[in-house]
Length: 341
Ligand SMILES: NC(=O)C1=CN([C@@H]2O[C@H](COP(=O)(O)OP(=O)(O)OC[C@H]3O[C@@H](n4cnc5c(N)ncnc54)[C@H](OP(=O)(O)O)[C@@H]3O)[C@@H](O)[C@H]2O)C=CC1
Ligand SMILES: O=C(CO)COP(=O)(O)O
Image: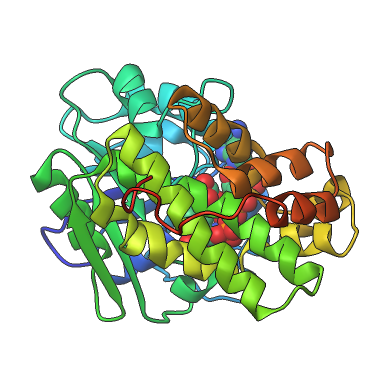
């Protein structure tokens, strides 16, 4: 531990929370990881390993772990929430009474609030109230690669520049580049939408449609991200950077992606229930597809690939029907007006 570095509480001990906590602890910050699974937390404390989510990967001995939320937050200067999107609001409500008054709250969760479609920064503003510095951590980053120290770049967006910088400082290190930005809308949209589009490329690869189809889906998927982002008021450069294109490419092509693996399984004819059970970790697209289409409908934006993924995930059409639908669309200019429409 290095004297004077901010103390960090990481809330959520799945694969990503554990990897980020290990990264920050290796950088010398006093770091506590909170999780709800007592066996897992005991293993992290005693064997320095998360056997459920990152088996076989050595965690730093300095990383502390607890199931006691109040204890995890005691003395924290910075809180990093890394639970799935469906648990985001309830986790913020649980931690709010224990948050030290000066501690800002960042999250590395990707998705929307299921059911309402609210952006996570909207949920955080409502639950935590005004005046709490907030930031979102996002970008192309498989937990396993970060946990074993492979080079990674991601981005931290927040309206409070000093807080976003302090989060980036905690993450930045010899094998980890953390950039900053001020576009929470665009950053959250990119991280959520790429999960839906990864299902599409997974389905195509599962159906053995070839590399041309994959590249076409990634490019037209980026176009869907840019159009919806423009409508909600996000910045185009955010989606052309790590939070958009970077994460889209990673998740659409890397077999470590759970969302891509769901698509692969569906493309090979497996049922959604079996595929999700086999993956055994959070697969955000299952809920995010509905929330992306809710946003698209609200803003009157057509998103053919995301819409087909939603219909496949609901079992309304087969992957083959989805392919037929996309290929039967009318021929048109690649950009009818500009990059966004
Ligand atoms: N894994 C990755 O590479 C990356 C993940 N992310 C994002 O990070 C978020 C977390 O994903 P990830 O860590 O991968 O997921 P995992 O499936 O690896 O772990 C999920 C974690 O969340 C916990 N959890 C589930 N439900 C609740 C709840 N209701 N209250 C409290 N904790 C809960 C689980 O606890 P338990 O074991 O007790 O069920 C587990 O610790 C997601 O939004 C994901 O998109 C972002 C970038 C990279
Ligand atoms: O967000 C991720 C990589 O940036 C992880 O993707 P999956 O959730 O699809 O595994």
